[in-house]
Length: 60
Image (tube, rainbow, N blue to C red):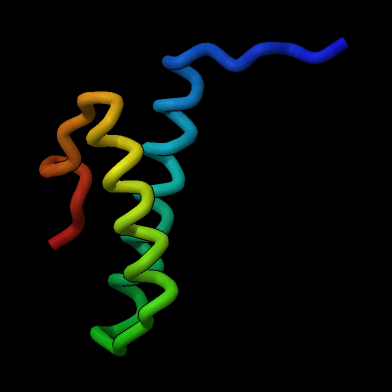
């Protein structure tokens, strides 16, 4: 029997994925990685569509 994922669970998983990619990007030492940047753009778009402000989640 399939279980439905709630919107809150989906947002939580998407935030976790975004934060994981942020850590990978920071550990990458400033080296260009087009695939990583593309994945981050996709997650940013998804989080924006949910109304999530990523400003506080972005590593500097």
